[in-house]
Amino acid sequence: MIAPPLALLAELTHRCPLRCPYCSNPVELARAGAELPTAAWAELFRQAAELGCLQVHLSGGEPTARRDIVEITAAAHRAGLYTNLITAGVLLDRAMIAALRAAGLDHVQLSVQDADAAGAERIGGMAGAQALKARAAALIREAGLPLTLNAVVHRQNLHNLPALIELALAWGAARLEVAHVQYHGWALLNRDALLPSRAQLEEATRVVEEARSAHTGRLVIDYVLPDYHALRPKACMGGWGERFIVVTPAGRILPCHAAESLPDLVFPRFGEMSLREAWEESPAFHRFRGSGWMRPPCRGCPRAEIDHGGCRCQAFALTGDAAATDPACALSPHHHLLAEALARAGDVPFRYRSFTS
Amino acid sequence: MIPRFAPGVRLQHDRARDRWVVMAPERMFIPDETALAVLRLIDGERDLAAIVDALAAQFAAPREVIAADVEAMIADLRARGALIA
Image 1 (cartoon, rainbow over the protein chains, first blue to last red):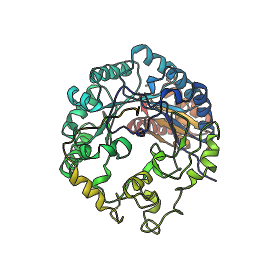
Image 2: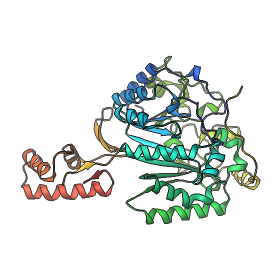
Image 3: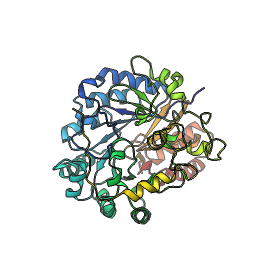
Image 4: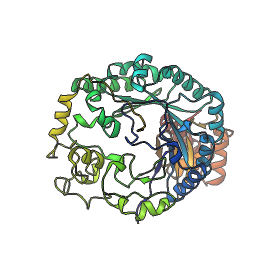
């Protein structure tokens, strides 16, 4: 019997007013016309809860760009899922927050691109965004909803990490996620502009540790380390097809949000297959589940069941082989690629996220 | 003292795995049987004494033993950020 997933990542849309150069959406973005309708999401939530998901992350793109976001949230809540809205906050107003809360929303994760408006709006590619986010944070707290601030950090904003921590406190967040960029899709295109130096990373880690003890009981800080300075890979998604199930705006069912970057895998489409069939039976979900697919140095490695060989998408993007050991591992014959990428990093312009014409 | 769930925290039945879980922002934990008995009585109206009374009616144990257990349990859940009071 295959253990069911714990969480569903629902990418409701790829539309977003921001243009972050490290967006986790694929480089090939889905347009509004391709998006699943409200009723499909409602059925999907019902199936996710039935399968064993406890939580849904309502994400995007910007999920509130969907006019039916309140109905979608209500459907997720009715299905019995813990509902987490992952938002840039720039489209939120008091009425929408009240409606989302009434619909059963449990928690909001608000993104912030930098501590100061000029930096944040340059990185996010949207003028005026920071003031809208500050207002959204205030409205979220006013509505009594718990708030997590999510700060993606990289070469161009790490100097402001202490200020980002102050911002989280000032905006009333109980949690702060300090997440180093993961280099897939858009972020991989912008890798030279985003990769932090070793000195930046060490300073960031020190700042986080200091802030954790300074703000115990007031602010929880989660810290996601960058792969490029690591010796061992991350347990990506907690293992392929182990904990997470992702559905794209157009209804593709994936084990991780970047999985469509892998070749030769056919991911099931919702409607043609139920979530349970996709999870339990589809070859794509079985492809990298467990450790049977591994080759040395992963095969026989005492960490094979701990880190699952790292990230399949990163392995493919860097080596051209999706079954290779993630180059973040020092045991990978491709580990040198990371040091070479770090050596190339510098002040180069961003390539902003956009829809292809 | 009326214990309440912290914002964003709730007790949820996990049908697929036949257990109860405490869901919180970006994390979850599985309460043991004793914690669960307490958590199920937290409704934002019952105070500590009412919770102890309800448990004393359910379990054959002296009220003061139950009271001590409940207080320790609630202190632990507060430290974990699951409850506020």
